[in-house]
Each structure stands twice: as C-alpha cells, then as structure tokens.
Image 1: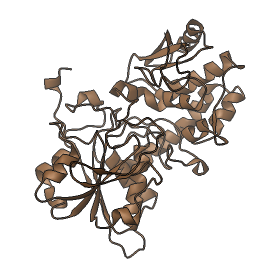
Image 2: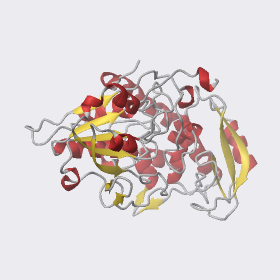
Image 3: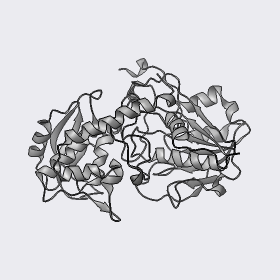
Image 4: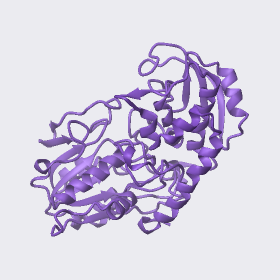
Length: 397
C-alpha cells in the first residue's frame, strides 16, 4: 500500500491539541511519555505541552528504557531534570514503579502518551496501570492519549495469568496478545481491577482521548503514522507481530536475538543444528510462519560473541499468524530435540518463563512431554472468554 493512500489516522495527542485542549487548559499537568509520544509532524508531546500557552507542564515521567527509549531492558532509570524545560523527570522504572504522593504533589492531571506493542509482557501497560492507580489514590485525574494497537485490535491470543504470578511483565486480567489500545486497557483496568480513587470521597476521573481514523483490523503500517521503535529491541512493527510468542524465549537458555538486527526474529544457541531444527518446525505447518536456518553472533546479551545456530522466523501471512503458538512450538521442539542442553532459566529462584506465561503449567507440561497443541487449545478458552469480557471497554469498531 502506498503511503499516500493510507487512511488518515489521528492519535489522541493530535485530537487533544486540535479539538480538546480545554481538557487540560490552566491545569498543572504531569506527562508520562517517551520517544514514541509524537504527533504526525514528529513533534514530541512534551514539546507540545510545554509550548502551549494554556498548558502548565509541571513534570515528566519516564517508563522502562527511559525518556528517550535508549536504555537496555531491565536497566533501572534514575530520575533527572529535563534541561530544556527545567522540570523534573520522575523515573517509573527505578526504585519505584509508580508515582509517589510527593511526585504527584502540585499535579492536577496525569497524562499517559506512549505507544504500546499489543502484548502483556511489554512493561508500558504495567506502567499505565500502576500510574493510574497511584493518581486516583491521590485524587489526581488520569488521562490517556490513545494510540493504535500495532498488531491489530481484533486478535486475541494466549492465557490469563495466575494472580500469584502477577508481575511487572504480567499485569493481571489480560491475555498475552490482548487486542486492545492503551485507552481501552485503561478503561478495563479502571473497572475490572477496581482502580478506584481512595478514599472513596476522592473525585479523580479517567479520561481517554480516542483516535480518529483507526479500525480494529488495522496493522500499524496500514495507518499513515510514523513508526518510532518503542524500545531498543522493537525496531519494526513486524518485530511486534512476533513478540507475543518469541518473547517467551527469554525464559529459556536460547537466544531471542537480542543484540542483533533481528531481535525476536532470530532464535538459536551455539548447540542448535540449524537445518534440523528448521525442518522440524516447518513440518508443523504453522499458519503464517516459515522457519529459515541461520547462523548469527550476538554482540551482547545471551551468548555474546559466540556463533549461534538457529532459525529466523519469517512472517508469511501476518493475518493468519498465531505468534503465541509459534513461541510455544519453538520451545517445545528445542526441548525435545536437545534435552541435555535446553533449559528454562531462573532469576532469584523463580523461573522467568512462569512470569512471562503467567503460569507454571506451560513449563511443567512441556517438561512432561505434553503436546503443545493441548496447551494451546486450553489457552484458547481463556482468549475466547476475554474477547467477550473486554467488549464494554472497546472504543473502536
């Protein structure tokens, strides 16, 4: 599709400054944003807020990877002062993962403007949830400037996590591929997860500024919006399409391709036999995907400086692709083919795959040799139930 033929899409930031500036006029604003918070002219939301005569930008808040999106995954971000606007930049991925009452002092409305990638693992939706809860608990209004789900808003896949395994890479209440925008998720979190103002006499409100021109069946490149990588290892929208499944590789001793030009597309390890593994995966006839044998050497992360052998996951039909299914089969075939080398990794005594999957059943059932198809069918029941449960919170048809 030629860029000039793409339907015009306006994100919540565009709509706010074009039609609804009264929502923040003469109010002290805290802004949660990063490099993805831009309008169609590539102007950052921070610049727009700071430069508008009717807006009082009081503080910025940054998620994982920092305000510029340059920090590696898992690296704690310090709070700083923005040199251009001379206002604090409070880190929400440092000592604390939610705004404190001190951070919120002097703020009337906390605004969220970040591009998500459509998967439960991606920590920006945990930041959304935590920040909204903190704001409303401190009688501060919360606003979401909506942006597209880049991997479609009509596809839902994966399980709901067990409450005991809720974490920053796994907020409760949503499946792995949730098919919702950040604005819709905020509405769901507000209602279902009881993120209500405390004490009860508080009057804090949630406001979502919807997009215009976005439809649920759209991929990101079917809009006319510029793509800005949401994190250092999310370079393209195609990466985001595979991420709900191939991110599960992080919970194993396989490389998920971090440190290469194709993170979450190149999967392997020094002890993998590329051709044999690719043949095994392609024999499954998974819809929308093909596995090509490759060699690669990550400059950092797992197996830094070592030659890995494995596969590149090629998306052959993104509308039929089921990324979670792909991820499960990648793990199952590697475990079955290399039982003495493959392992699930632990962090501080916990299996990281359990936090990503939101359950220990995936790990235990695969270790017992259970066919992946049975796990996938069981997870589809969760996805089907969620498709119905999310209906009251959807904003776009």
